[in-house]
Length: 159
Image (cartoon, rainbow, N blue to C red; front, side, top):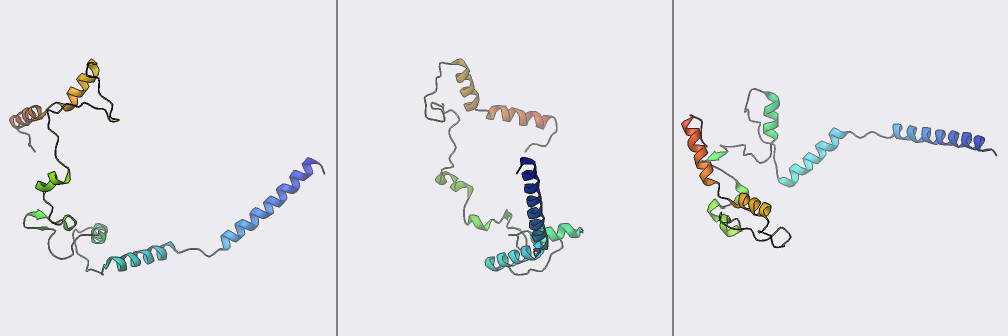
């Protein structure tokens, strides 16, 4: 058998197999994606104990209202803000004053960096390294106060 006739036969067999595979794929039962998504949403709602809440009207835009009503975690009854503070139930009784006990203490601004990220000592004799460390650890609060003062004098809103 010559190589040309072998290639022709091989192509014919491959073509027939591909046709059969494509036919099989096309005749398979199609999945209704909306039905699958709705089923998943129903399962999620059941596991979270979510009930169908009455839809609230936030704006005149119906699409925006639908999106806002689908947003999880917002209370459907009463205001989001109570007693002047936003409620975050997942935080419990956490207050910002408790941050120090969670390791969120701020480092002093006058601290000098002595080690690199891998624990190696920093060569402060190198002028480029020393100036970079100085720029990183410098106390910029005076600069920020001066900028706020300048903004106030120009009539800009200061945050």
